[in-house]
Length: 581
Image (cartoon, rainbow, N blue to C red; front, side):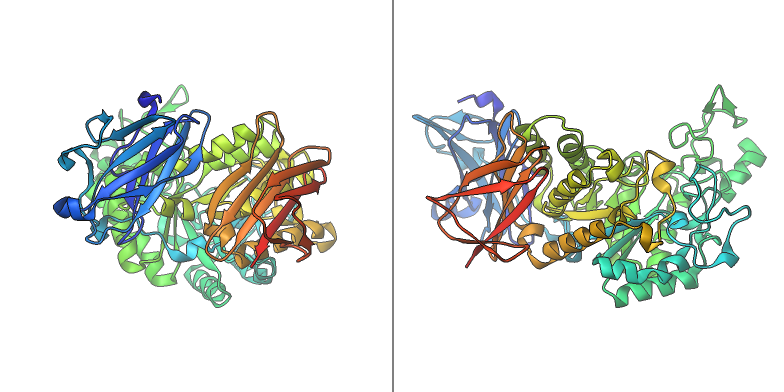
């Protein structure tokens, strides 16, 4: 047994409260090195009467490690614990201090979860577990009010550029709300809608005003009201890392320099502010002069931004915020942000844009979830770009899943494309079957899936600005087969809770293989999903329990022979079977 590979620490994703009564324990071991793990757990004040061994199961695996988990509900909300590791004849007890070949005599040397204080528990909104998001780039979705068009607006459907306008607005979303209801989505994420100079609106000029090209506060109120009547939640984009160059405090700074009362609102390295050799003398988003970075540690800046966060919840009843460039803002700001938002609306969704591992933001005091780009990369690598085999893919998914507490995984935002990336169908080089297979994994994985506007009707486009085309509303030019596919996929996800929050286990993900078999299981259902990520048909055989099986798409019975299912799949095909109880 390679003890050097064994890892555990209290808190973070290794020992956390899932709710007000339940503690999850996790431990890492070398892959395929340990055959059994148990937690030795009890109450520190009545150890002899309460200690018990709790078997752990293999939660996930990656190329180097296995990750084990168990769930314990301590009677008095506190836990003393250690681990027992077994491999053949080898057996070790792991304490906080050492590995031992005999049970520890002194429980004081064990790990400890001191007490489940409810305020410390990461509580994510229940509705997010059942959400299917649809991302809208407002300037390109629909032009519902030509009177609000910016100067120089172009005819709808022209070639998107970084600096042109087509007149999309909030009224356009209202006018086409039936499209979203018909599709079946129940949540919308809007990129920024506040006053700004660009078509993307990430250069905020006024955080307290809707951009007049999009409408006004009454338009937003009407949109949110209509969405709520249809069971659709609304998420807005908060750009608090930086403002725009036309933001009034920055205009004052440009005018008055060191004498500006707003000089501490920003991070100025040198006066007068200027751009030298392409690099601004003040901190910005990337090196973009139009987007000066805000000093969120400044009390006035903090007060202004938190006021804006509260205002739009109070006035328009939005359901949460997506936080742009969230990892470049200080943690203390986000802690105060969470307190303000959750006090006004406890089930508001706080979603951070972080492209990498994000555990420090998911400890219960900042975000509910993050945009799950490690998931995005794994899916695109395997299903779209053909990088790696099924084992590599399962390893990448296992690694991602093991990094966060379960409630964060259940609320994480799973996307395959967006306004920041090439569109999914373009990434698939027009191969709809590959696109569908990637989407089927997205919709059968833990977390909330998001569809980028237009993907459901076959829109294409490379990186920005091509991915920001005008939505195609001519039905004759829409891919209605693809629309029906997404309708069905959304319907299946909403019908079976196992596809949303059930346990995930890979039954087959072999080295050199392009096929996958995995289960999603909860107390209601067990669903086995077969995927062929190859350009030729394949037979996939996997051992299963003796049971009656049916295809969840067709309700047709499927026979298992000698404890195995043998499924023939077309190229880039997928079959989902469930146990009939």
